[in-house]
Image (cartoon, rainbow, N blue to C red; front, side, top):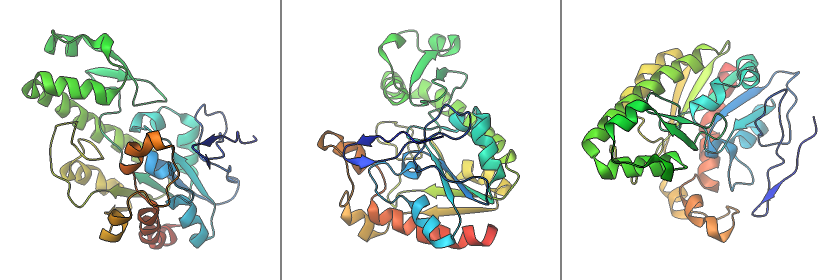
Length: 274
């Protein structure tokens, strides 16, 4: 299948599909008829605003095709609901899974779009009963919804967070359990992360704690935690390509130097397991 070439803010992502999947991924499309490495994750794995994201940098060092299955706004749901993508990930020599946010998933309180997991679809009767004063028709995105619920009642909000965290652990176990090859978990974290349930200030991966990661780590071949160096932090958005109206979004993602640092740390693990 040929790739659809699309330029967003001057950067060519060469979007493409694999098999019968409805999802579009960063290209050019890699050859999956030979041994390859798969990368699953969100906007950082996709490499939003980055000319050479870390899957591409790893590919240049390990001499194996690296299939970038990162998708912006992804939660765990987008992958486990797509049989073609799970088949690709399972068939890889090694699969690197970026630890994703816990809020972009369908759960007992609300449902999300099956492919755009940051899109809020509808509340459950349970959520309506807990927050009877909230008009859920106002919300289109999960983060907006959660900000409002926190503002209305941070006490009741704890129930929502607990559900998201329990669902995240269960889905991650399901995801890793479907891998036939080794799975490397990639935890991208900030040096200054402070535990909080406030969705307005919580850092990515949102609502994911070390204790949660420890519950899924035994199923993986390796857990790699990467925090940006002071040099990477100081560079900010230098070298990133984005429309000026998306500067705020760009500052929340890994920068050019951070992608190089991630790749350098991943390469030994990929070589070991591939």
